[in-house]
Image (cartoon, rainbow, N blue to C red):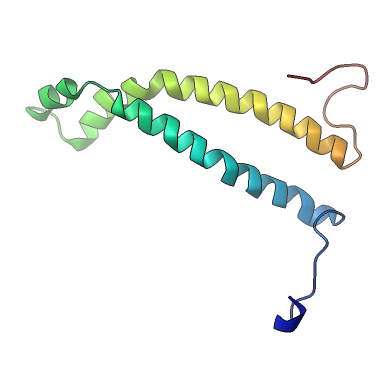
Amino acid sequence: MRDMGWTPVDVLTNASVFRPMLIVTEIWKSTGYGAIIYLAALANINQELYEAAIDGAGRWRQMWNVTLPGVRDVFEVGNSAAFAVGKWWRAQVGRVEGGGGTERSGSSTSC
């Protein structure tokens, strides 16, 4: 980095870089899992529903009336899990940063 004229940044001790770096890496890590799960949900939708919708529905109507209801359950479970993991993750980041997280000192956050 110094050869290119950049100043080195200590990611682990610089608080203004640490949290954004953790957020970016967590999003990058979880994107692949979410993509596989949603692609599996899309593949699980009955193709006969699309064939029946071709007669009177355009692409947008197919998306709203066939695709979204077909993946709604997966979407709800995925969002619930993401919320729970996000809450746990915030508490862990708070502990690493020295703030004790969002939990009170007497409670447990183990999963």
